[in-house]
Every structure is written in structure tokens, then in C-alpha cells.
Figure 1 (cartoon, rainbow, N blue to C red):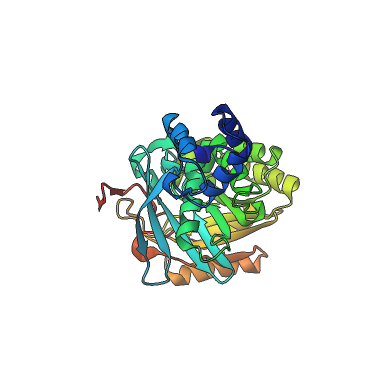
Figure 2 (cartoon, helix red, strand yellow):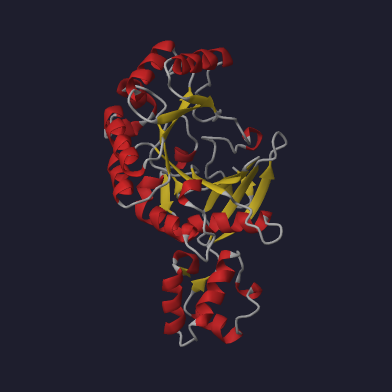
Length: 348
């Protein structure tokens, strides 16, 4: 099976011409694909053309929405998607005053195995293709669209998977979602979250991607970080600091660090002091996250007093910090809770 959403407009043109169809069919097909249409909805395309595409085993839409769970707390929507091979992924739509942000997955599962995250419980099943990542945005945009205006304004690559562990497919997705004639979502409205795969941070900068880079840091020193993030064996916090400085120098984009507060692990004032020392000299912001509970992981979030004391110390030492609002926790849609849990129409 070949997924049409994996292809750029120029590649769609070549497919159309290879089927001996007039070139203008490419624009018609590309428009329908980015509207989330399946073949039966493409009213201005002749059946003979669609039959040719089907005969070549081209799939119009890479994913299907299997189920939607809506938070009673804040209206956040968790989407469960089914892929063509039967695999399941999850994503989240969060509504803010400034617009709608979709959190997308980049892999089925994850091999980073961070101690606080549900996504790695099954290990890495496979990478998502560019069209499967794009398909999440297109499907949710269609599901929430009213009139001609695009429903999705911002994208965060913070769902299941490590985006830099799927670098080529993720960067092609970025090209596709940013393309004129497609959804055309600006790079400035896209954030990518990584555990800190430093070689790919350098590559992203050199390849010219000017998006918001978010680092899942969660500890200010290697000893603490290694307890919760195995990736620290390969990339130290010092390596990360050098890499993000390079990214900032290349792009001018402020770096965002994510810090989940885990009781008794990384939440002391000494950790706050170490974090201040680590981040000195960087143009950055810290998102403090109250750890979201994952039953199988067993880690507990710190209390509100600790969070306040930690943040106060950062701010007194001129480190920009905010506490991230927890959204979708009642539907397991908050940070760290997405996983491959929903199978065969039932929760495991």
C-alpha cells in the first residue's frame, strides 16, 4: 500500500502524469487530500482516474479516527487513530484563546523508555510515515472545521515517539504541512519536543528548520537525569546545552525546556540551583510540569508548595519559567500519558 499523503504536490503531479492523466488533476487531488477527503468524496475526479489510483494501491487518507474522548474538565479532545496496518496511535486537540493546538505522534510506541512516560511501555513498534503524521492534522482539522477557515492553528510534536528518532519522515512532514496549497501552517507555529538527540539538533539547524525546539530535560545533572531518562547515557546535559546554543545561534528561536516535577527525584532547591547554573547564558524558557500519573510507572508528582518554591527560585535568578496548565488528565490525554492503549475498539 502507498499513501498519497506521503507525497508533495510535485510528487503527486508525477503520479498523475504516470497514469496518463492531465496535469491539472494533480491540483484537484492534492486539494481533496488536504481537506481530509477519501475517494468517494472527490466529486470532481472521474471514476476512471480513481480506479487507476486504487489499482496502483494508493490510499487517499493515511489514518482513520477510531474514537474521540472529550475531557469534562477543559474540553480537550483525545483522538484515537487507526492506521492502515491496524496499529493504533493517539493525539490531543487543545483549545486556547489564541487558537487550537494539536499534539501529534511521530511513532507507534517509543524506544526512549523515559521513566515517567506511558508512550514507551510497549517499546518502538514502528515509525510513522510523513503522511501518517500529516494525516492526524488533516483528520482533526476536518473534524473541527467550520466554514472555510482552518481549525488547526498550532502543532506540537509531543505525542508518542521521539521525533528525532524518525528524523527523515518528521522533516518531510514539516515540509508537507508548511507547503503552500496545503495546510500551510507556519514553522513559527510548530514546536518539536525531543529527549535531546544532539546530532539531530545540529542537523535540524543546518537543514534550515526554524521552529520552536523544546527539550525534555527533567533534570539539571547527568546523575539525576540518568535515573529517569536512559538517553543520558549517550547525550549528557552539557552536550544538550552546546547543541541548543548552536540551534539558537542559527535560528534565533528561544529554546524551551520541559521539566516534570517528580517527588523525591528532581524537585529540591538544590536541583533548582543546578538548573539555574546549567541554563546560564542560554536564551530559554522553562515549562514546569506537574507530573501526570501513569499507573505502570509508579512515580508521583511533587506537591504544589514544592513547585512554587522551585519556580520562585528560578525567577529570582532570572530564568523565565511558567507552570504548564494540565489539560486532558481525566482522559489520559495530558503530557506523558499518551500510549498505544486502545486496541480493537477497547481499552486494554
